[in-house]
Length: 213
Ligand code: ADP
Ligand code: MG
Image 1 (cartoon, rainbow, N blue to C red):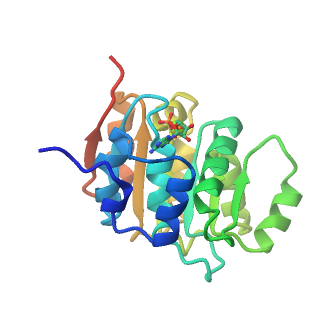
Image 2: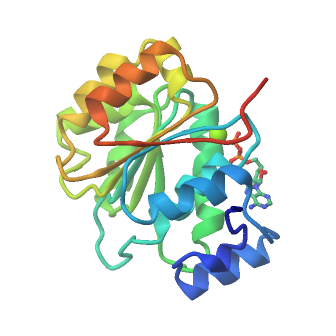
């Protein structure tokens, strides 16, 4: 049995579907086709697929579909291993969100001054994309409120573990609601990922597509 690859087969807002078509996303990639039906049900997911397979739009659409633009609070948090990756992810989410018009996506990474980030947070934010160290700093200082979070995404989880971010991720999770959706994306599936999943995901569905050989 084949999985539908048309975005229109998913229960998505019309504006988002139109925007996907405008972006030239005429059909879903394998990881999107397999993970999105599960993500849109609100379940936790571990998704494994190689680099370039469209993982960002998989969780991006998953974040945007239930997002409430009228509530100015952080509803989704994407953790990435580096500032470059956080910038790329934020850019892709902004492209996916442009039809909605008023969705604020903020990057919070280290290596840049803290103060201006606080100023941006005070203006209200819907989606935060950042690296674990700086996100944790904001959560601890109370400048980032994660109590209204719906979705936590661990992107490039294998690389975050390689970089020693396990403890920071664990500390960030403490600031998020227990009733949240957690999505873990990774190109590889080393042992540490299973521990991460066991501790922070609830009955995750494992989805594998386009795996590197
Ligand atoms: P990954 O995170 O898996 O490495 P990306 O999310 O960075 O991959 O996506 C790789 C490229 O594929 C990006 O340029 C993105 O815009 C493009 N892309 C994603 N989904 C689709 C799609 N459904 N149709 C066409 N291009 C897509
Ligand atoms: Mg990626």
